[in-house]
Length: 345
Ligand code: NAD
Ligand code: UD1
Image (cartoon, rainbow, N blue to C red; front, side, top):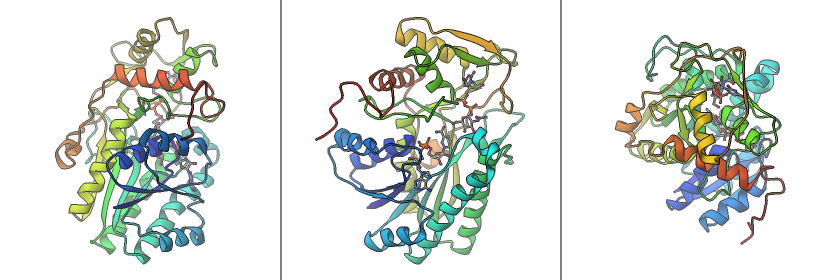
């Protein structure tokens, strides 16, 4: 089965390509490297020892994408490509709507023309907005609070309409909670551009000496220790969820949203302490004001994915932190000038 993976050079995409190749799928990656590095491709090959196809293209370029569909017998599409920084989306909403919506539209047009019906979409827990109750269930009314989140919500709605027009389509909307961790080899991982916005890459960059101290955004939430709670999920567990979604799509038409989370919440201080345990030394921090737009608590009810996809996250927070740290310490500058790593085959 040939899977077209858009954004396959990115953080979640690269880990998913590894699991796809290890499971015997044929993989075609399309990426424009707007938020990734060509070295990722060698690393995927080093980890798996399997060949795959790569096209350096922009999904927005319908002509190039049509060429790929003409050239390859695509059986299914996993659509990771997109812009994902919340703050940037507030500053530049048009580029977020343009990239995220138009890339999906181009893919859906081509899938229709080439009769490809299996589609797995990277949605986000951000579509739940700020809810009164946790754990978050798929059936809750959705409410995004920023342009990035709204772009995900709009795409989910668009995919609903597409399914109504063509009930032969099989569409999985995967709502990721907070992906962290890295492949156990330490060869691929999260490689944020500039100063990280997310907690875990920020902590590991403090630990590696690139940043001075962690700013904890608020210790006055009504949580056990006052800091925000999130459902952190190992990126490899997340990657495996995509394979389960592809399999279910192959067996059954329809459109379904699934929470991909562990169902457990961890606070910022708990995460920091786990890293201190893993690294074996203190990590400096300061308590700061709350970050605007943040919610206190978010964690998934993953039971729908457990039951319908036969998927369950199995890696715990300790192994997530160990793997994040291995990646960061082996690659202090991300894919630029990685230390002592032989990646060519
Ligand atoms: P990422 O930025 O690491 O990967 C996205 C990849 O898509 C990058 O390699 C980038 O170069 C590529 N890309 C972007 N626009 C493109 C275009 N027009 N044409 C071709 N390639 C393009 O991000 P990620 O963390 O791997 O996230 C993957 C998907 O999951 C995104 O859609 C994101 O919104 C969603 N998501 C991520 C998180 C998270 O915390 N990482 C959480 C929820 C949802
Ligand atoms: C962010 C995004 C969300 C996205 C998610 C996963 C925002 C407002 N939301 O959410 O859309 O789906 O990442 O990629 O950016 N924290 C600190 N100090 C830091 C960074 C974070 O204390 O330097 C805290 C936050 O306040 C939060 C927790 O750590 O309580 C996790 O933050 P983060 O990793 O940014 O994830 P989300 O807030 O869930």
